[in-house]
Image (tube, rainbow, N blue to C red; front, side, top):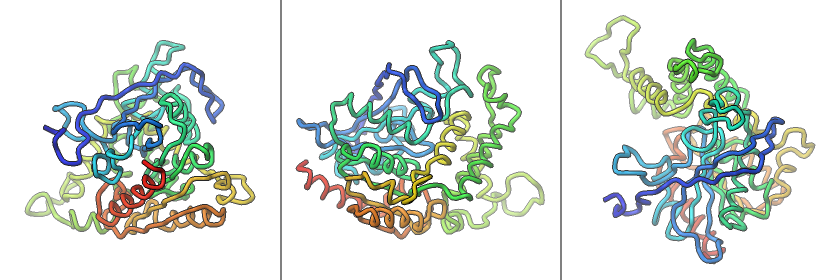
Length: 381
């Protein structure tokens, strides 16, 4: 049974927090109500001091670890790192993993019914930001009776949420772990996101975001968006090692169908994504990435943004990550040092690329396990 596998979370059941109070959004709109879906792993201790919040990245959701049933082909997206004795040790921590509003497959988002109209939100779902997500997560914190998170942890877009927590709610975070993130997107990264969005919105099956009304799916746009995104998450070294210039057949066919193994792989990734993601959601999530810029209009820059923070920070980067390279993590570290904050930094030698934060290289796992173990000791967990 999966429950008996060493280090396994086992079977988990999603829970839902119904938020009935209106949520005012940064864009100027509001949500009259929303459902926040989340999962928990481990046990909350008597004084509620061992809770860890895990923030998901662009294609993640509430299902971070374990299985929902025997029929699940795969466990949650960070199952390699969450569980008894794992990097985020559920023998010590009570781990909370919410799905952000606007994300796919869980909390209220574009595929949900708008209670004011009785119709699917679709393109009418308002633009959401990292700040909006953190405010919703804070409502979950309060509902669970947690005064302060022992740690808030996230990679990529999740790492941006960790930073937002540290300066929006400084007294509610003891340790902040920022993995493979950036203080704001570069122009190149915004450009990648825009190309992906254009692939979706120009798909004839997009129908201005109302594809559900037409019983359609912008498959080609979603597929192209995923293919583009996926190659930016992998390093050249990883793609060369995995595929090289290997052909699918014994000889070149001199045509425009799939001939190289890497072409076949990317098409498979794109086609799988179509079945597992929503087009309007993809637009929202990439815009949340684009808009994150806590130092915007601050004379003191990022250091001023971090001024309210009281958490101790751990920042990790990966040498092969060219989407969010180590230089971007060092910007965060430099700002924290300038702001006089307690910060540790680790640069992990890797070869996969941006997706390394989802995996289990020994240096990465050992470093973060040790850091969180010391945090637990210092917090008396």
